[in-house]
Image (cartoon, rainbow, N blue to C red; front, side, top):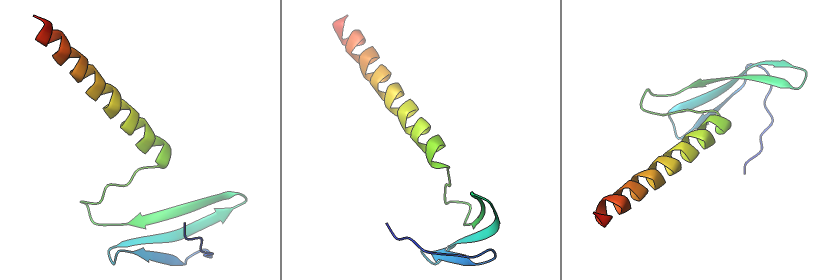
Length: 72
């Protein structure tokens, strides 16, 4: 993991097309702005993990249904 220090108004560039800017700092909260192409999907980590879990459950359910169909 790369750890960088940034001040309000400073930015990071990732992969030449994603810019992350520190918009505001209040106490222990930081407001971050992300500018990226529309084809770049951006999620908060907790939402991303929920999506991954839901996809895994859906895959397992589909595999279970297929196994049931094969019984008949």
